[in-house]
Image (cartoon, rainbow, N blue to C red; front, side, top):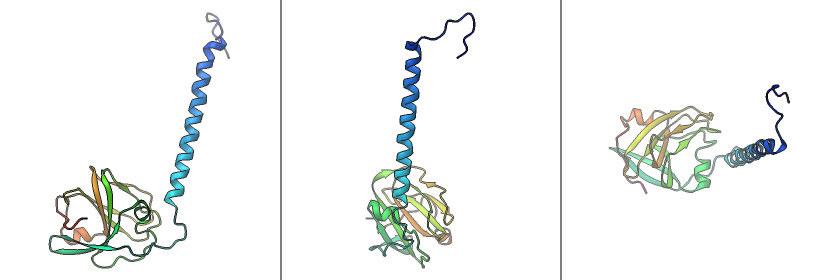
Length: 172
């Protein structure tokens, strides 16, 4: 270490706190790396390339339109979602139900279908609708805390004149 001539070299006592901070930083970096790897493994839990079997459905309505929504209401079914599905006919969709309102974010990893997602508040009001491109890791998030998200074939909401502020009825 080079010290300017007017400054005395650092003592061991002065260097130890710096070394401790570096060691803590490396430990935190290692913990962060393990967390990311664990999350990646969980997100990839179904590497079989097969869609999950159809889930139980519930009828929902958006104005005069009836929706046949599969219900994903636990961690496993929400994580799998519509991955590997190759079709989503007519008024079929998937309703994601969460325990409590929170900001929800979705991506399209391993999902070959283009989808639109409506983020829905507790009272059934659509907060925002996002179009999602297939097989991407781009995140699409609710603009505020929501308890529900409804995925439909891309453009379904627009084709039926359903926008943010509209209501979805029949939510569990």
